[in-house]
Length: 454
Image 1 (spheres, rainbow, N blue to C red):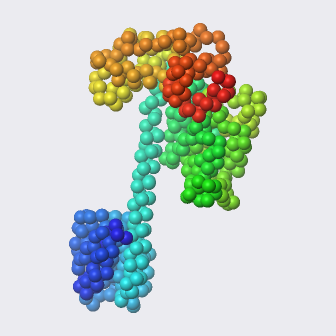
Image 2 (tube, rainbow, N blue to C red; image 1 turned 90 degrees about the vertical axis):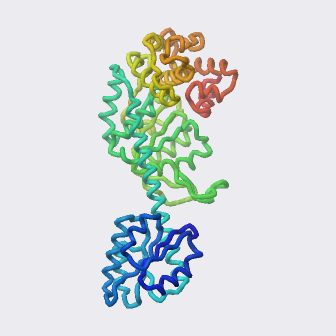
Image 3 (cartoon, rainbow, N blue to C red; image 1 turned 180 degrees about the vertical axis):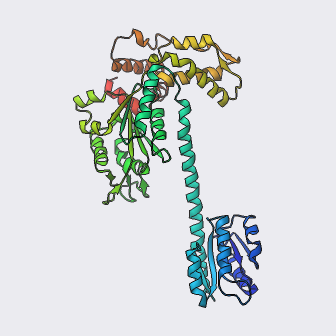
C-alpha cells in the first residue's frame, strides 16, 4: 500500500484528523477534504486509487442518498477507482445499498484501525488489478490492430494470387481448419493472419507457434502449459500457447517438423477440444480455430510413416496452396514499389523510388527465396542507395549460386537441398548466417540438414 494514493471525503474534522494520523505514513499520498463539492475536481488533479467516502454530509439528514450520489459521480468519472464507504453503525443497510451501487466495501464508525487498514489494502489491490487488466486489454487491442494491418502487405493482382485471395475470403468466415502450403517465403503467415482477420474471431487474439523452433523436450510445456513444480525448472504456473489462443486462432507454422509423439498429443487436443497442463489432472476446455502451414509434402510424409494421417485429416479441411513468386511475376512491380516505400520510410530516405529498369531486372530473376528474398534485396538496396532512384545495378544476383528454377529439372526437395548446400558454402559453415540468409530458424535448418543428410 506504500504506492497507494488515497482521498478521504468527510465533513467531520475529527474523522479527517484520525484518518490522517492513521494513513499518512502508510501510503504514497493522502488528501483529506471536508466537502464533496470539490471531489471530482480533486480526482482530476491526480490518479487516486482509493476514495474513503462518508455516507451523509448535511446535518440532520441520514438517508445516505448523498453518499450514493457522490459514489456514482466518482465511478462515472473513473470506474477503476475503489470506493470505500464510511457509515455509522445504524446505517448498515445503507452501506449494503452502496456496495450494490459499486462501492467495494464499507467501514463502520467507530472503526478498528487494523480493520480499516485491511479494508483499504484490499481496495488498493483491487484498484491496481483493474488498471493492470485495462493495460492488458489495451495491449490486446493494439495486437489485434497490428494483425489487421497485415492486409496492406497482401499485394498482388495476378491471376494466381487472385485465386488464392478468393479462396481465403470464402473459407475465412467458416470454422474449418486450414492448411496453408507453399515454398519458404511465399507469405504463409500473412495469409494466416488474413484468414483470422476476416473470421468471426477477428477481434480475438491469434497465437503463432513456430513448430520448428520448439525443442521436443519443451513441447508440452510450450503448448499445454504447466503447473508450478511440474518439473525441475517449473518455478511458476505457465499458460500454454493453446490455452492462450482460446476463443481465437492458433497458427502452427512449420507443422511438418513435428515429431510423431508430439503429433499424437496435438491430435488428442483437436479431437477432445480440451487439454491438460503438465502437473495437473483436470482438463481445460478450449475453443479455437486451427491454421497450419508447411513447405513439406505431408502426403508423402504420411506414406513414409513420418506424419499421422488422422492428424492430417483433422487440420486439412481446406488446403490453400500459395504460388511461388516465379509464378506471380506480374506482381513484382507492385511488390517492389511497396517494399521500396516501406524501407525508404523506415530508414528516413524520403523520396527514394525504384526505376523501371530495376523492376525489369527483378522480373527476370527466379527468386528461389520468393517474396522474402525480394523484400530483403530491396531493403539492402534502399540502405545502400546513394541516389533518389534505385537502378538495376543496385541488384546483383549470383546466378551460379542459385540456379534458375526454370532451368532446374529436379524435384522441390532437390532444389531445397541445393539451396541449403550453396548457402552453407557461401557462409563457410556459419549455420546462424545460413538460417538468416534462407529466412528460416536455426532449428528448422537443423531439421532440414538432418533430413537431407547434408
